[in-house]
Image (cartoon, rainbow, N blue to C red; front, side, top):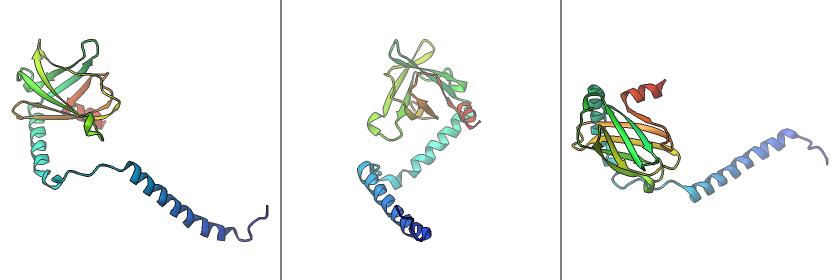
Length: 166
């Protein structure tokens, strides 16, 4: 095989061709596996986000925290509430939100039984889940992240956010 006379010319031609080919690959991926559309009223949801931040700040001021665990033998999610709300309400709402597939989201109503909150639940598929815990009246709100599949206990609240930042 003969060497090109001017290797710089080969680069000048090959690099733009590679960029164009990469653009077509990106377009094909976007069309085949694109994200779902945002909800029609997405731009109106800002007020709810502000309210949620106020509720999270209130939970932090009250020192409310929680530890969530999964008991596979009983098929239950078990939650221990800490802080000012430890002797808390009879029920709590827990949202387990999948980062990309809304069909996998779960909403659990946890009932106080023997000092812990419990609800029937099954194992989660591995993902980076968002957790949202609130009392029935939504006087406070805790948010957290779950990396994995809920086999290890997860802390939710201000202490968990500080530990995650480290």
